[in-house]
Each structure stands twice: as C-alpha cells, then as structure tokens.
Length: 171
Image 1 (cartoon, rainbow, N blue to C red):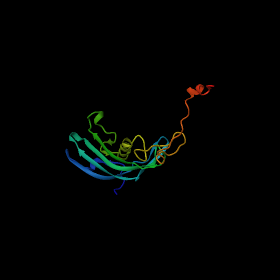
Image 2: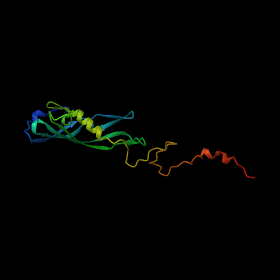
Image 3: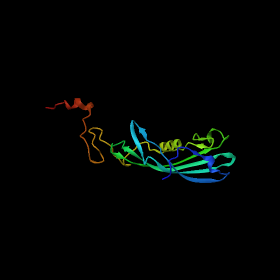
Image 4: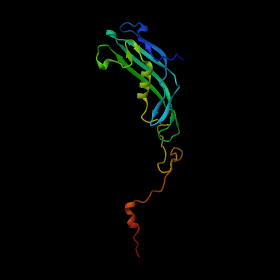
C-alpha cells in the first residue's frame, strides 16, 4: 500500500508539454452522513491511480481512479449494507482558460488530492445505500423485513366511505 498523500506537488514530475505519468497514491475519502446516519468508507485508506498529463500552455489534465466500499445500514430494511463504489474522476486546470478550465483542487502546482478524492467519492455515491438492488424494505404497518417474508400481507381496512352502507339492514 502506498503512503497516504493529502496533497501532491505536480511540479516535481517535471513534465514537458504532451508528457504524462501514472502514479499510485493512497487517499482517505473519510466517512459520510446520509439523513443523520453515518456511513464509513472501507478500507479507510485506498490506493488510487492518479494520471497527470501536461497540456500545452502550461496546464494539466488529471484523472483519479479508485474503488472503495461503503458500510452502514440499508436505507430500506436497516440490515447491514456494503456496496462497492468505483470512482473515475477527471479535472482540467488550464491557467488563463476561463472558469470552466480551472480546477478547484489545483492551486499553482499543488493538487489537493484529499479534497478531490472525497468530493469525487461523494459524487459517485448512489442516492440510496441498499443491502441489495432488489431490497423490499420494511412493512409500513408492522415493520417486518419483507426480504425475509416475501408473502407478508395484512388484511385491508374497509374503506371508511362505505361505512354507512354496512349499517343497512334488510328484513
């Protein structure tokens, strides 16, 4: 496992225009909160591949790739969930190229790798953390886990709009 790197000096690579390098660096995305519930990234520190290419006129094209798991309760049934999230993020930093070509993670020649890894992981997260794609969740009436009892059902309450008809007696 590579040593943890929170920031990286791009200038130390000494790249000429058109040159590129691939590096393996360790990053720690941290933990995340969804709806007041904490989800941990496993492992806490992952090996990431950083691709750096020098562009003409002094800019950089950057690519960050890594895979990490997320552990915590399923948002549907509350059982343990551990999906694996793959991150493939790209950034461009071209000085003088306008706001669209400036990376918020590059300041001069310094790349804020920790912030980029955390933000890229957060953007790759699913909208719901579930134990499995077809998780049925919990019964809204009694709270039974519908994954364990697929035929679970309750007798429906009669429609209150028909209550007066039940009072009719034919003799």
